[in-house]
Length: 472
Ligand code: AMP
Image 1 (tube, rainbow, N blue to C red):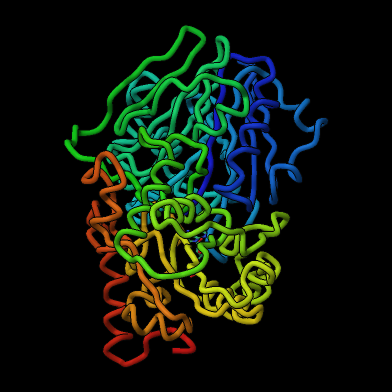
Image 2: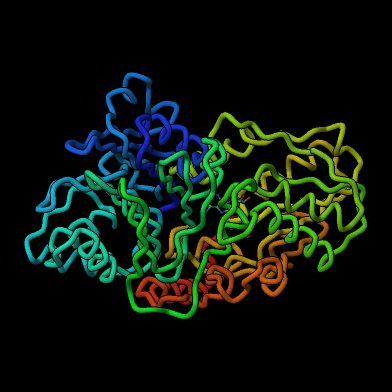
C-alpha cells in the first residue's frame, strides 16, 4: 500500500501531545485523511486517532487526555479503497516488550511476502498496513535489547521508510538505507523533536539539528540521543526528488537543501530550456508558485496571480473517489479574468500525472479569454508508478506513459507544452546522483516485484491499442 504521510515525535516536554498536535498541523499537506497521536507517561500509553484533518480529529479535552512527555503523531493519506480508521496511525500494539506505537512514512516493497510468511506462521493482522508487519518483526525478534530488536526488524524490510517507534521510555527514529523519505531532528529546550519536514520545527520555535541519515537509527531517551547504524552499508542513496517538485513545503529544509531554493532553480532552468514570448507568467498554486517565480525572474516576464486557490478543501488527489474530481478543479481554482483576458500566458505547473486537472484548468483559462496558453512543467514526464511512497496511479493511467509531448499538448489544447529535462531537474539539486528518479525513467533503485507487474500491464494495453486514457 502506498503512503504519503507525515510523522512527528517529541521526547522530554510535559506538553508533548499539544506540541505534536501543532507539529501535525504544519505537516497537514503530507496527509489529510486521518490523524493520530500516541503518548507515553513512562508507564502507560495513551492514544487518539480518527479520520479527517488535525483540526477535526483533536479537541483540547482529547489532547488533555494524552498524558506524558513523550509523543508520536501521524497524518495519513492513502490510496482509494483503504480509507478506514483501522489503517490510521500511529499504530499501537502490546507484545513481549510492552506497548509499542509506530508512525511510518513510506512504502515497503516486500510487505506482501513478509505478511504471507507471517500469516502462515499464525500471525493475525488488524490492518492492511505495512507498518503492522514491522511491529510483528520486532515482537518476533530474538535479540536482547529494544534497540537491537528494532534494528533486526528493519533489516528484514525493504523499501522506503522514515519511521518513528514510541516505547514507554524512548523514541527510535529511523530512515531506510537509501533515504527515500525525509526525516529531521531538532531540539526545543531539552526536548528532542523528530519531523518529516523542518517546517514543523519552525512552528514550535525548535532548533533544527540535522537529518536522520539513511540507514541510521536515532534513539532518544532522557539521557540524550544515540545514533546507531543498521543494515548493510550502501554507498548510494535514492532520495525522492519528487519531494522537491511537489510534496514538501517550500519553507522546509529536506535532504540538506531548501525546498524553496530548489523550486526556484527548477523554474529558472525551465525558462532556459523552454523560453517563449508571452505577456505574463502564472502558477497553479500552491505547489508551483516558486517554480513560476523562478521562471519569471529568469525570463524577465512578469509574474501575475492568475489563478486563485480555495484553501478550504483538500488537494485534488486527496479525494479517494475518481468521480469527485470533476468538481474539484472548479472548487479549488478560479481564474482572475482581469489578469488573463487577451493575454499570452505562460502557465507553470509542477507536474502532469493523469492530465485531467490541467485539461480542466485550460478550459477555465480559455473561458476568461486567455489569448495563448504556454504550459511549462517543473518535472520531466511521469511515465512510471512510484512504489516508494508517492501516490502515483498505475502506469496505464499516467498520460505520459503512452503519449508524446505533442499528443499531450493537443489533448490539453494549449499553444505549447514543455517539460523540464531530467538532466535539467538533476542540475537543480546538490547531489544529482543521490536521487530516485524512477517515476521519470523507470530506473527503480530496488528491484521490486511491483515494478515488473506494472511494466507488463502497460505493455499489454499498448499492444492491444488501448492506452487506458479517455478523451485521447
Ligand atoms: P493530474 O490531473 O492527475 O494530472 O494531476 C496533476 C496535479 O496533481 C499536479 O498539478 C500536481 O500539483 C498534483 N500532484 C502531483 N502528484 C501528486 C501526488 N502524488 N499527490 C497529490 N497531488 C499530486
